[in-house]
Length: 304
Image (cartoon, rainbow, N blue to C red):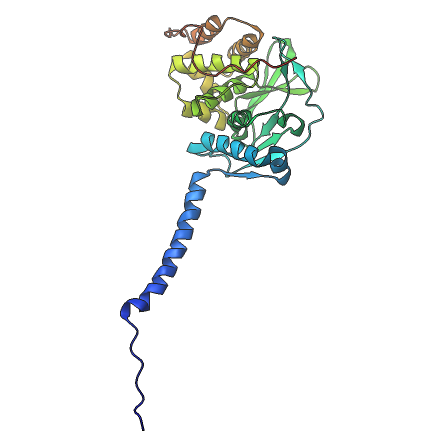
């Protein structure tokens, strides 16, 4: 009878190498997921229709713009949803300079709504710029901050609340509206602070953004401060930084800021407008620089 031979013992390194490799694989997958989550704060999601409207390259450009903007995160929202919805009221309009403009998107807290009939006219660079601009509006708090009591302005307008840097108004009668030019100007200034190649979509936004950049640079307001004002509904904080002392949420200050941002669209002088706002606090600033201020690239002339 032959003696049965015992199986040779498995080398020690084989006993742990496969479990170790399994652990490493799990850790690798986990670290990849963490890196992806860290890279995208807040999470950026697209509806199926938005993907269809944008196309593959368009989704990539839009996502890149939002990622660039939200490098420092978005404290009010864990997710930004990009949707597409036909807006029957989004009609072509003539700007004061005669150029043709059209609504490409409208945003609300945590959501960017694309207008399909306009998106098709945009190039990939335009889509990236659009994302950079709309991100400011999307990062606002969910709820506006109501005033303790409606604030009466001239012409019978009443200020009801502040949302982002927008002013919610009740017009004479029962109709309500939003004064958005201050927030639009800040959105432009923030977009170019995130990407110096940013180009304004229409001449009006270029003017609003340039005024805001003059105020920002002259008063030494950082981009993170600007973004914080929007994220906290802190219009009072923005006005205070511009005038150089604590402002009051009163008709005097609000009307002058609203007049300045309305007037710059209508062709008021940039330097005089900026100085007038800063001198509301009777604090001498060093004044804005020459009229050819580096910052937002002007939009290309649109065809007839």
